[in-house]
Image (cartoon, one colour):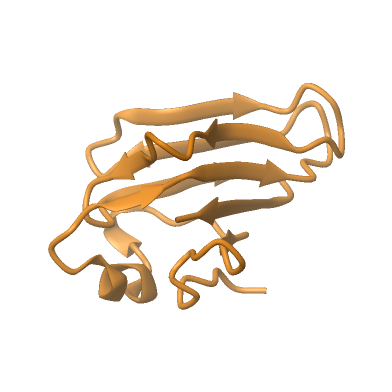
Length: 109
């Protein structure tokens, strides 16, 4: 499966990411959604990481780490962010899913 950004991350249709990218190869589908406003997500979950050696890293385009997670229990979801009143803000699609060892990253607006 390829990354799915076209659902706009609404509550019933989160972004579903399964393929990392680099700062030089930010997916066009993500860039097209950017507009002038930052992207805000109420909930960010790494689903079904397969092994305790798997990691997930999200950075900004300058390489600053935003999230750096390691799977502690195989096949157990890892909640990175869950806050309805204070969504996590990514700057205008200028973020990179650098590492995704297994599973999927789900982001709800």
